[in-house]
Length: 363
Image 1 (cartoon, rainbow, N blue to C red):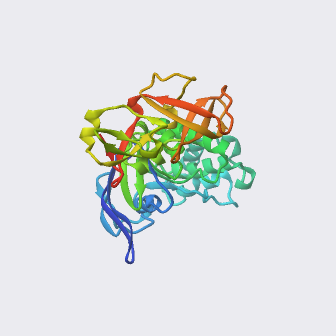
Image 2: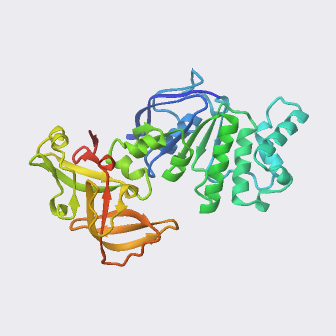
Image 3: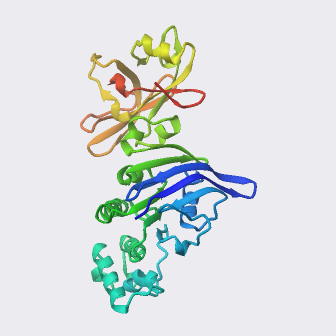
C-alpha cells in the first residue's frame, strides 16, 4: 500500500489545459472516488497517476517518491479499465496470471498466487474457462484479479462498472467494497455515477472543468455541499434550487412567495446581506407531505402535482410552482393526481443558501 500525493498537477494538450493545478493527498489504504461529468478531468488525472499520460506540471509522489517520469511498469500500481481488457483466447487462470509473466517467481509460486487470487474473487470454478463463457460481472472480476495478482501498492479503477447492467453494477459495487475491506489497499476509483461514489468512497473528490471543487466524506458532501454544482451532483434526485433575494431583512422568494413560506430569520438575513441574490437549496428527502390544514413546519411549499414517480417504498412528486418546480419525497401509499394541490413541510436545518453570483455556500 502507498500514499499518493498530487501537488499542483497540470495537464496540457498544446494550448489547451484540461487539469488546472490540482492538489490531492490519498492516504495509505484509503478508498477515494473521483467524480464529475464527462470531460471534467477525472480520467486524465487517473491516467497521470498510472503513468499513461505525461504530467505537464506539478509533482506526483507515490509512497513518498517522485514518479513524474517513471514508466508505468515501475510504479507498482495496477489499473482496471472500463472495457475489462482481458484476452479472449486465454483462460481465466492465464488472464489472471498474465501480470506475473515477467516476474521471477517459480512456476509453483505463480500458480499458488493465481489460486489465492481466484479464491478471493470467487473465480475458482472458472479457472479453465475463456472469457466468452463468463458473465459481465465475472469478466470484470477477472480484470480485477489480473491487477491483484501482482500485489500492487495501489489500485486504479477507470469507470469499471459502466458497461454492466443495473443489477450487476449493484453486485459489483458490493464486491469491490468487500475486497477493499479485506485487502486494505489504496484505491482510486473514477466514475460519473454519484451512487457509486456515495456507496464506495471513504472520500469523494468532486471535479469540474479540470478543477477540484470539494473533497470530503460522502455524507459531508451530501449534507454540506460547498457550491451549487456539488449540491446538484451529489444526491438522487438532485437538490431543489429556488431563486430568492434578501429584502427588508428577510428572505423573499419573489414570484414563488405565495407558495413558499420561509422562516423569518432576521439575523440570518442580516448576516447574508441586504439585497443579496441567493439560491435556496433543499433536498427532496427533507420535504414531508402535509395533511390538509397542517402547518407545523417552519418551511412550507405548496404546488400542483405535475407527475408522480413511484419507487417502491417511496414516491417522488414533481410540483409546479408559480416560477419553476420542486421534487418532493412522499410515502408510496399516498395516491397523487396530476393538477392536484398539495403541500410539503421541512425543518429550518434542511435549508441551504448559496450566493447567486458565485454559487458558493453561505452561512
